[in-house]
Length: 425
Image (cartoon, rainbow, N blue to C red):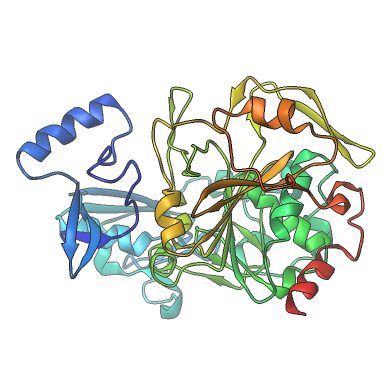
């Protein structure tokens, strides 16, 4: 395939009309040279069958370095000990299409033809070299529960066994982060397909497990993990008691096509119209991962994070948020330097967008960013409006209070389960 047409990236830094996928001046220089030859990697297509698209040109990969578990003498490869089922076969095919070499490191070698053919992830026709690790015991697959130490192999994350979640997932302590996660979880519904992004959103699974509702939704990660409960922190992408481990390329086809019912993502920086910047923050260039694809496809997108950053100190005391030291950096800015999510396009497509912080909640409507909730103990002017670079829409009568029960050590009024049941009624 020479390239792919996609709506993902329209209106963001990936759009040819914006930054054409460039994260720094050097990339912009190269892209400008390619554009002069009509060979740019990303091209805006204004009318393809009556709709706008971006065309992503394929890249000529010539080397693939990958890790797996077992290879037989013919070069067939399985991944039974791996936590993730990524896109090994897709990468191998892309490299072979350009005449390149595929090199796979494995833990062990098996007799030719002895592997279960249904378990083979990369077939022999796609593999050039097999490298057998001399010390497979040193290959790190993840962490013990609660991140105590690196481990060679943990059955609970690979899906080989089911583990008691009470031993693997501990409740979050009551702090500002837990308040935000709780508030985001309130927006989900039983029966939904839900994705939780890297960072703070990964703890949504822990809160849902604590509230006894994790079996009522399907939890999904961009790694291709489906079912079970997502791991947090360094175990991001792995799931405790995973039900299916899907090829990541196929998984993203689903994101781009069917889309998610519900997604929770990190709130790094939001500009006046609610569009999000995750790629260039405070002079630092960052990767975007699957953020652009997953946010574009989510029917309900929640962005969660602290209201300010750098030096922020807060606590939950007597059911109220106490800001002990304000952060030095504002997250709600007039205009971001780059965008990885276009809120205007999402609203036009009928998506629901919430921006959940520890001190307030915004909803992006066709009219703009509306301040719909404020935390108990927070001063509207000093703690919110003075810490923003733009003025949001404030409803007549002011914003309502955020739910008081999520600021308590134990979620009151029936907890999250009662919230979800009320939606059905």
